Length: 153
Image (cartoon, rainbow, N blue to C red; front, side):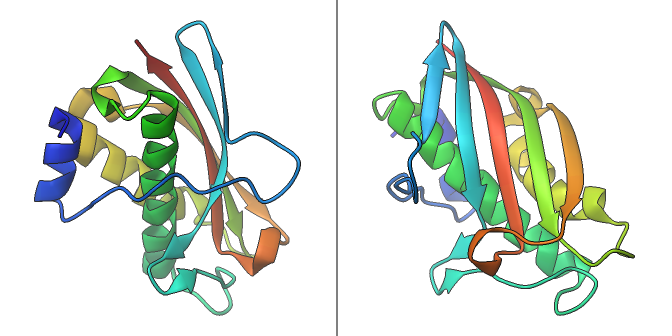
């Protein structure tokens, strides 16, 4: 077990196998020491986390959905690193999409669910730049989708 996975275990998180792509794309692309991970949609053990912020979901529920996306991102990083998550150097950037109503303005608070989790799990290596934007709809009606850029060894 990697040091990162040991830290995740203390947080009650076990990484599952990386989700397979849902369409004609690859889950990640590595260029030199940079890893570009495709958007990961909000899900839990019960299935997809669907809903619209400002309508059927509140900010705390949205943040939990964003946290689930961050866990899926780490699963993809682990797969890209041949199972050795300790090859992760740092999180470089996240781009978060929030399924929300036109008058909902707390997208950054929703994406904090992912950002806060990554800093808690990875320390300073989890600090990153990011964008948090609204979307009129997301695939399969999910609440949140997040893509990421990571530096690996």
